[in-house]
Length: 163
Image (cartoon, rainbow, N blue to C red):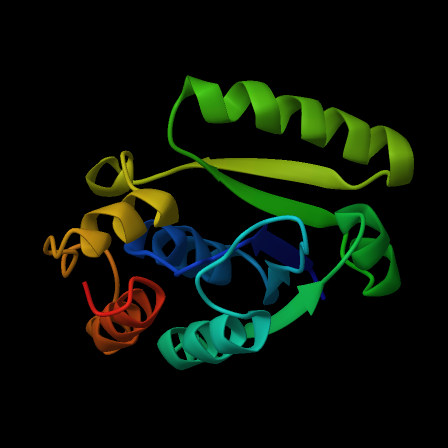
């Protein structure tokens, strides 16, 4: 069985993420979406909330499961018998950083990285951008699943005190 991991913060998951996940699900037996646990990173949603939202919007893919990890991704891969990491690339700036990571992951544990270019319709999209637009009451309905819109709006209202 060929298993891969799609790691990230997914705060929140976007159509860009889902594009990479769906395409990976067509190529591999199992896709594990690994949600980053990083206490130094400020996130809008907790890890359990992100896992729940991702599980909800990926339920249509029978070979996709959601998990979380803390620490080195290669250690997670080794512990879960995963030999490939799938990373979506939006621009050359993503490539510079991800190339370094892929080379160190290969050297540390022999874990390969597959780079997948994002679909042109999503090449500009990031969770940070979605949160910023939504925080100013901008329309993000073209960027995240409809089932997550209200959750995002409610959380932003809570964080910003209803402003």
